[in-house]
Image (cartoon, rainbow, N blue to C red; front, side, top):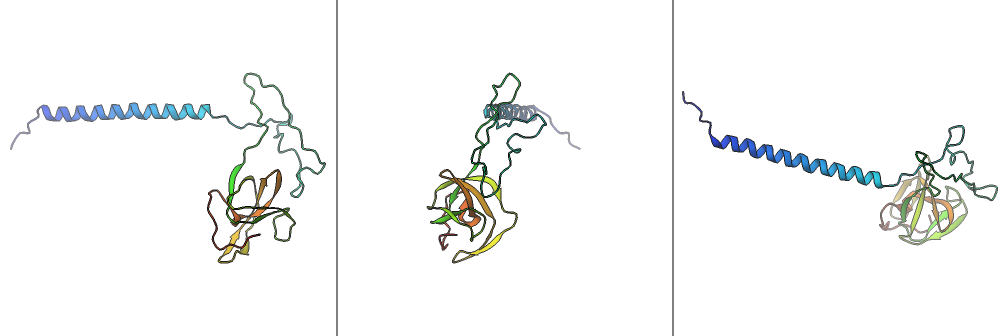
Amino acid sequence: MTKKKTGFLPKVEVLIILVFFASFMAWAISKCDATKKSFEDDPVEETTLNGDGTNAIDSVETSPTDPFPSGEAPQLSTTTPTVGQPTVSQQPRYSKLYITIDGLKMRKGPSLDSAVVLQMKLFEQVDFMNEFTDSTYQINLGYEMADEPWFKIQHRGKVGWVYGAGVNFYKKKREGAFPGN
């Protein structure tokens, strides 16, 4: 049998591995701290609760065709925040969508039979109002049959519905589509 020689080289290898591990841990901790700080710096949208614990914005009743039947927008409570009290964001945040069919029509309701509110150009940016139909609808777009839900959007101060195939999160043209869906 031969004896295995232990010398200087294995000790150096272990030392290099330990230094590499320590430097990796220092880098990872600094990245985590930077990410945590960036999340702490971002403002969080908060809402005010009514006295009964319900959300003040959700307690306003609206209909799908006329968001403010009385003709007046509801007023949110605007109290001065104190230390430890959440702040109220007056403007809700909506996702941005882009029109993918030139001449897409915004309608009062989620159907082709609804009245047209306005017609939009290709790549116009609209606000998605976080509402869509529960079911999908098949509509012939020319070169394809789309099976999409309707989305509620806001554009140029008007609120209405557009067919889901006519909007996207990215600026891309839907080829072969008939305008006006």
